Length: 144
Image (spheres, rainbow, N blue to C red):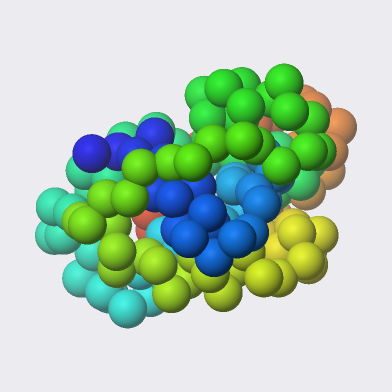
């Protein structure tokens, strides 16, 4: 189980709630679901579930955290909803409440919130000028 499975689970939950998911939404929902989990499980460094799930790191991109491999996988849809029915994974149901909560939010509100995260905020100029990209550790996500 990893970030690809989380993405598939997000699509399945979205479908169950008749919600569409764009690539940008997918990235932000993944990020904030993991952040919520980390806040609820402060001993996450010893939590094999989240450490195994976070197998492909977010990077600092202009619009906030992005998992590049997942972004590229769906980049052909641009800003259109991705027609993926997803795969509901019972092990990932702990994220369902967060998934629905963040899918209902405006995606650019989530972008704005993600820009307040310390790793992004402290490196804003380097990120926006494309002079450096940073990879999020779980500690970075938990700090937001």
